[in-house]
Picture 1 (spheres, helix red, strand yellow):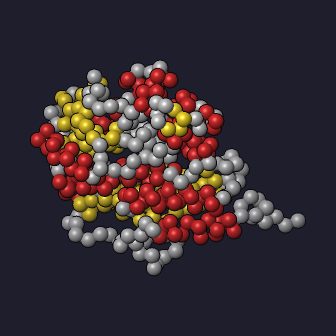
Picture 2: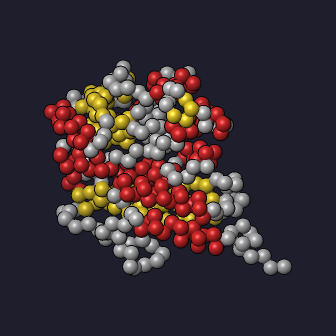
Length: 339
């Protein structure tokens, strides 16, 4: 008896339908650099002009176990924003403007409607960051994923003139750290989040007075994309270093931008920590050092500038809609001191 590919669990017709459904979302991200009239197995993008020595900056990441909450809520329209954000927020830390993005979506049994909804979020993230979605992969892998589950990851490429690369080498003791507010947990620490909040849909759908919303809505709030605000800032101010606060929180990420012999002091009372993080710390029963080593604590990005540039930095960030605060300063030494 003949056994077809469809009999094994892979339906190519569903794949064709998914591509058709997502085409409009993809095309909505196209920029002037996209060369859509050539090639079919790879995406083409024209290098921008006007740079003396253009350098490509690349980053890749996924969404992690935050996906579990998308499955539980059957809400798939924002998880793609997270996938883009985790990549483009990383590369803009080097001063790079995102050029294009590619996504990878894998599932056990392909639902064209679900994948198109996820890609609509990817397209939204690309529009927010100015990146073009020029390709991707949709993989149907029967028996590999549980029913209704999938994984998504992404890859971004940006460009910066070599002379304008931001790498932290000029940071010195006495510089100021300005924190830019996050939209929530973003996309890190969800293995602990799931331990604290659980996975019972009825409980997650309840309204929480302290949060001012349903728990699931707080947990699925998409990662904020800082690209346009950061690119506007570095045109106006000499930004010495930029840290994206992801896995490892303040403790691991901020020191990554410092040269040897430099550490920092962070004033944890310099801004209002969102209620969500306070609740999680209470639930977990952990110390400040532990929670600041896990979550962003309401600060998604940190920029390091000379103290003479602080006012201009804050004014510029606020002009692009960001909320920010002076959260600390650099000192001789190493690591992060919380007080």
